[in-house]
Amino acid sequence: MFLEAAKALAGHVSDQHLAEGAVYPELRTIRECSFSVACATIRRAVAEGHADPEILEGLEKTVDRAMWYPEYLPLRYEP
Image 1 (cartoon, rainbow, N blue to C red):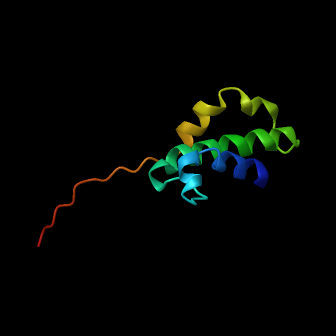
Image 2 (cartoon, one colour):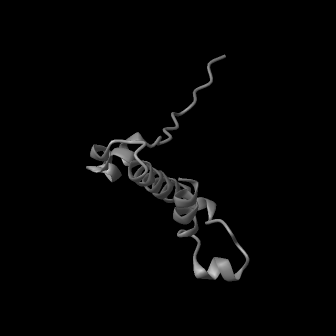
């Protein structure tokens, strides 16, 4: 599973960034990277028999719904 996660993460590093010596994708793509790593890990877990194959039905939608989306509420100071 770790290898599949690493492959998914490496897939987000562009050739240009590799040429510049980067080994990780840009931080601004963290959500897309996390999504890919999660899906790849779940697929490998199913392939190795650690998870039920039914989880693959609608996997991308399930992972997307499970991801945390920050919601910053306005702060109001009251003395």
